[in-house]
Length: 178
Image (cartoon, rainbow, N blue to C red; front, side, top):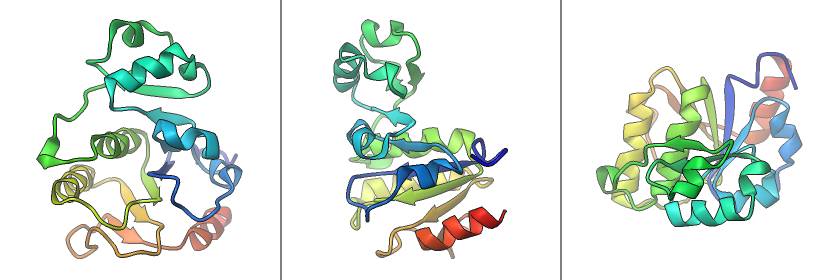
């Protein structure tokens, strides 16, 4: 891992619907964030689970011993008391969002990173999700958000100067030159 890069870059894997990616190539520059469903394929460092019942099941399976698990503050006591589980305030249907886990994932990743690279983002978003994502990007002007999917951009760089689209290979090559 390159010195200093780990604390500045975050890779967000929103779903398993991404081209084959070597997780170790990403981890050379920063941690991988994702939902619990991405852990097996990407060996996700930081797992965000916005569903308190699912978080309880994950803790019962000792999932939190394999990664940094983030669970909502309104999770059962067994989750809140588990060593190493990080708690966060889950947005209560923020902006009418349907995908609360994705919104929570973006919020948590932006706390520690100056550059957040997005992989596997859905092609289509519910209007509420689009509003919630816009709110996260807008609230984090010091964070550079980069969509690495080849699909349609879900936010406009004209509207958000801290949001852009790129190619994964180009970004990895650029990071190697830093």
